[in-house]
Image 1: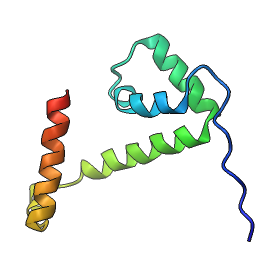
Image 2: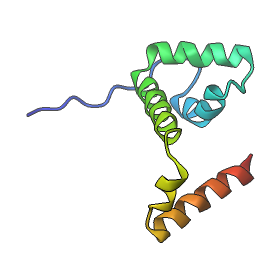
Image 3: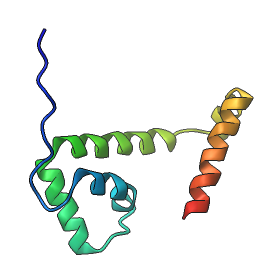
Image 4: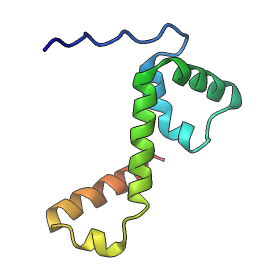
Length: 93
């Protein structure tokens, strides 16, 4: 079985790394309209970033279905690791 090498990033003025750094702000509609338009143009030509966006949207959707009982059912170490990640994310904002 042969596999194709990964496709190079699209040729535009917005590197994929910039999109990845801004995807949360994009989803939160927390970026200026001109930058949003550039991000959307990039998404129109970059299947890799489109895939990343779809994955993050699925995670957000699934996380929204979690209940307190779901969190309580986690093993203590996993629950603490998850809560530490949430606390860290909150502090960064």
